[in-house]
Image (cartoon, rainbow, N blue to C red; front, side, top):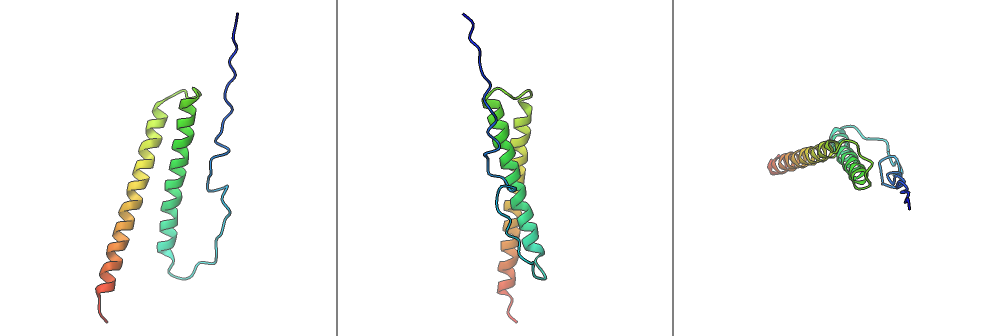
Length: 103
């Protein structure tokens, strides 16, 4: 008696991504470089986390040919998160220093 297995259909179309979210971009005011940098960092963290979720799904369903891609995706997500946290801390420290200045 032969049993035939069916492949699990990919689910990553259901993962929330930046493209799936409504784009709400207003006209940026002058001096919004910090907002642009922070938004790029947040987008980078989201994209790397989405990639990790896709790679984990592929590994769990047996569709991954090279398991090292999951390790690389995890490392990329970790580095993106660390970079975001470091930039956030530097910005908060700079704001703190600026708020102490008396004019």
